[in-house]
Length: 102
Image 1 (cartoon, helix red, strand yellow):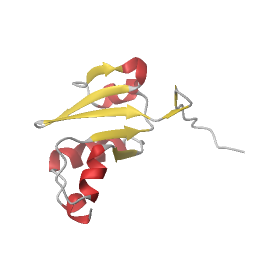
Image 2 (cartoon, one colour; image 1 turned 45 degrees about the vertical axis):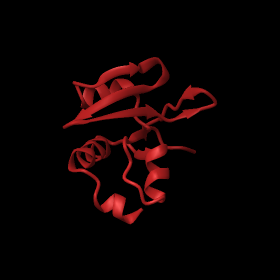
Image 3 (cartoon, one colour; image 1 turned 120 degrees about the horizontal axis):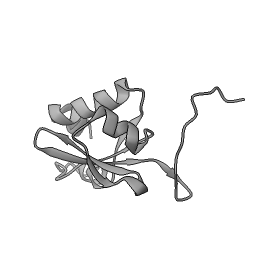
Image 4 (cartoon, helix red, strand yellow; image 1 turned 135 degrees about the vertical axis):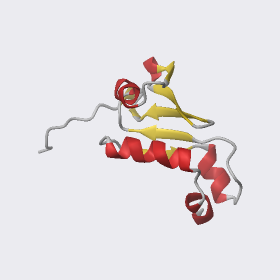
């Protein structure tokens, strides 16, 4: 797993950094995690984030609106297409509040 993280392509790291510096959390998910845990190089990488699709489109104007109604956009970086989906709870998109919690 450490090899995978240490050798993450720069184009993917740039997307992760851009989401993070825009106030979002972002995680590599799905088959990429399984493949990396098995010592394999993932064929594709999917992301999960707490940012809404509309915010991702603001950050990445060339994003493909893959399934905005379901919280998914595809982000382009170099030759990579990264399907990025907003976290959901009970089938609903996760909305975060900027206000402090009680």
